[in-house]
Image 1 (cartoon, rainbow, N blue to C red):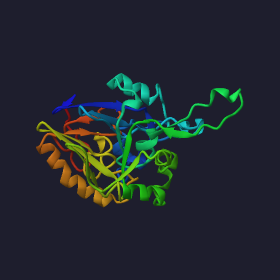
Image 2: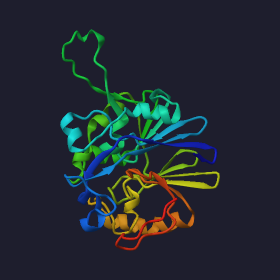
Image 3: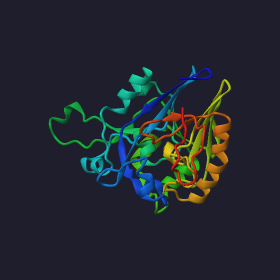
Image 4: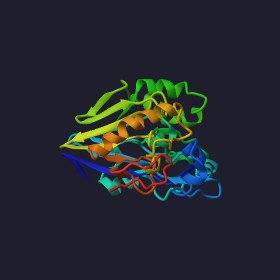
Length: 291
C-alpha cells in the first residue's frame, strides 16, 4: 500500500498463542471466547504484524516478531507454528533481504516484538560433526536499531511482572556490534514517522504514527493488540498500568475514528490493518466495524 510517497507492507511473522485470560484481563471468558475461541490449553491465536516502510532513501522495519531462537519446549509452550523464516516472508512481501534493511525500530523489547532482532549463527564449516555452540547475532547486519533509552534501562532492570518477556539475547548482540542507538522518549525516525512513549502496557513502551500525503497510519503496539481490544474495558492482564491504558484509549480512539486512520493491530491474526468506523459497547458484544 502507499501512504503518501512511502511504500508500506505488512510482514506477518508467525502464529503463536498466549493465554486468553491473560490477554483479556478482567473481561470474563464467556465474553472473549465468542470472538477468540481458545484451544484446549486456553490459548488464543495471534500473529506478529511487523511493518516495512520504504521512503526512497531508507528501508525501515518496525518490530521484528518473535524470532527463531526457541527450543522445542518453548515452541510448544507458546504454540509457535512457524511455516517459514521471517527473512523469507520479508523477501516475498518486499523483495528485500535482511541486509537491505537500514533501520529497525522496536516499540519495546519484549520477546514478541524484538525476538527477530537477532538470529542464531551458523556453525562453522570446520566443525567436523562436533557440537558447536551457536550464538545470537544481528539479523539485519547493515541496520541501525532504534529503541528508547528508558526502554533499554527497563529491559535491563525489568519489573517482576514482565521480567519473563525480556530476553537479553535480543538486544545485547546488537549493542556489541555498535548497531543499537538509544533514543529519547519521543522522536522522529524518518520524516513523517513519529515514535511516542505512552505509559500503560509498561512505563516505556512506544506507539508510532506515520503521516504522509494527508493519510495517517497508527501502530498501537500492545496498548490495543488486536481489533478485539478496541472496546474500552478490554485491556490485557499483562499491562502494568491498565487504568492508564484505558485513559489512552478514551483519548486516541475517537480521534482514530474521526480522522479515518489506518490502524495497525500488531497481534491480530486476521486483520492486521483496518479503519475503525464504529466503537463497540462497553461489554464488547457489538461488532467493531472495520474496512
